[in-house]
Structure formats: structure tokens, C-alpha cells
Length: 314
Image (cartoon, rainbow, N blue to C red; front, side, top):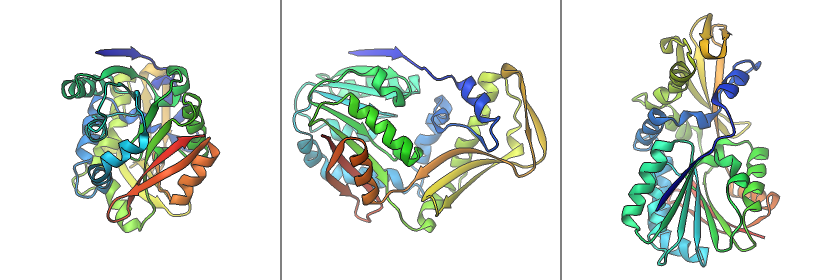
């Protein structure tokens, strides 16, 4: 059974207006994922440069039964930023009993399609799909025993360390002791490996980034000329993060009619659109301690590029 709740407390318009009036202009990365953005991200996951999806898929294919065994009794699976559910399927298959699956995603079309696809494979599963920002989880989900939260991919990397700990404390608030969160994180490695994953030769990531401006044009009456901006991604070694920016190719003024505002750009000025922090295992240990969890186990891929960690609520 599929139940959808359209819940969003944050406004795209408000966040765009705020972000584009800051000294360092910014747009939040969760707004990448409209219908087109989700399709572009699915394409990114297939690119040869984008190692993250393949590395985590390897972990899940090799260890799914052991991972689910470590979950213990499972009555409810909550997934943050569920996306198309392809990797999720690997973890649901070993659960040999009826359970409730609660995917949370900001893209309603992808959420519904993936939930229906999973239901066709797991007819004993009950689905409560929630269209919302998963950072609001404390307002969306009530505590219940035998719950596991999935946070796959490297979405934790979009949050700075303080925000990641704050969000995990929210997750902890809807769990009972012994419940767990299964977390994916991209590990620190050479920038020669990391940077190409965000600068692919086909330009798909560039299109994904520029789609933020196209979305403003579509939904807010923006007048961005996409050809006047270019994608830039680089590894900030001091912060241990990839930064993605949109760079203005020239001095320009851009109207956003729906917000009744004009945004001024100097040549070379950027809009900061995403961070992707890279973790050490010690960083994961610190995140767990600061948010009320203990790490039970960590699994890595064969090259030690990616980690999935099981954090148990204290």
C-alpha cells in the first residue's frame, strides 16, 4: 500500500531569495532534485568517473545478508533521500518478514515511481512514502521499536560537520535504544580520484549543476542565460570537501520576476551550490558519539574508497 504525504516546510522561493543575496551567493543542494535533476543524477551514477555508486553497490552486494543480520529485528525501514531505490533493494531482499518501508524524498515523481517498483517486488511490504525534506525527520516520524534508518549514497557529505551532527541528533530523537542508522560515506583519498567524479568528460554533472538555474527560470520566472554560467568543481583540501560552484562568465544582472528582484554578478563571481565532505573512519566515530550513537560495524569496498557504517542508538 502506498501512502503519500506532501510535506515541505521550506520554500524554494525563500531559499533562492536568501541565498542569492548573501556575500557568497549560494543555492542549497537539495533543490537539485526536481524531475530533470533526478534524471541527471541517475545518469551521473552510471558515469565511469563517478566511483561512489559502484563502490557502495559492491559493499551491499557482498555484505547485504550480514548487514541485515546486524540490524536485528526489523519492523520499519526509514530511508532518507531514497531516490530511485536501486541500492535499497539489495538491503530489503534479506528481510524475510513483513515490514513497513518509509522512503523520504523531495522529488514526488521519483518517490512514487520507486515506491511502486519496490512494492511490485515485495508485496508483503507496506509503504508510507513521504514527500519532504528529510532534515525535518523529527516532525515527520514518531518513534517505534525495531526501526532502522537508511542514509545511503554520500548525502551526509552535503552537510558540514556541525549540521551533520545536528541532523543525526534529530534522527536519534525518533529512535529507541538499539535502533540503528545505516550510513554511507565517501572516504578521503587523492584529489586525482575525487575531482573527476564531479567533472565528468561528458558534462552531465555540469548540466546537473546548471539545472538549478533552469529550475529558477521554470518555477520562479528567472531570466538566467545558462550559457553565461559555467560549472566548476574542485577539492578543497583544507576542508576535505568537494565544492561545486556556478561561475558567471561576465558582469551581468539577472531578473527573477517571481521574486521581484535583480541579482548582480561580477565576471568570475560564483554561486556555491554544493559541498561533498570526505570522511575518515575517525570522523564517523566522532559523528556517532556527538549524536547519541555507537558504531557497531563498518564495511568498505575493495579499494577502501567508500564506507557503510552501522550506528546503533545508545
